[in-house]
Length: 189
Image 1 (tube, one colour):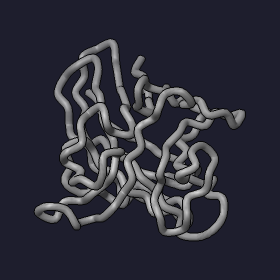
Image 2 (image 1 turned 30 degrees about the vertical axis):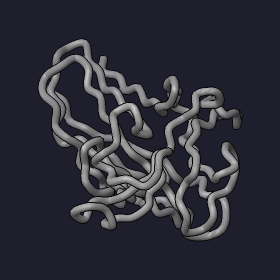
Image 3 (image 1 turned 90 degrees about the vertical axis):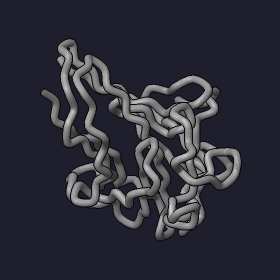
């Protein structure tokens, strides 16, 4: 039976269980607010009981800086060592690692990744600007709802497939943004 394993990367990975959430937070760390129209300064895994499951992991954080201000029109982000073009990020520095595995060797096609309201895949999260990219992309995608999804690279036949995702979010209005989730879809054969 095929399985997905989602991890927030860091010094050691934090597995993101089905009831957990990826929490984007402010400069004060876990459970701190992000200023409206600014992007996350920290990223965490919040458990279903409200605990910081990523505490002690020193989780990776990728903060969106600009859509096309880098060299050659590349998007820019800060992942801890200053503003850089996103195509310079290393695998181990990405926010998320998503593994899809199957006991049979399968190829992956048509994979997409996006943010949505947590209920209806086509509905973007309300009042949140979400930017995502796959490792080696030159620009972020504003992947809000399934119609605006980030297209991921097809992968050849294997029993294990890894996807590395950069993710950043910004509130557009004051208040808790709890109708917000990530989703990945793919076809395997």
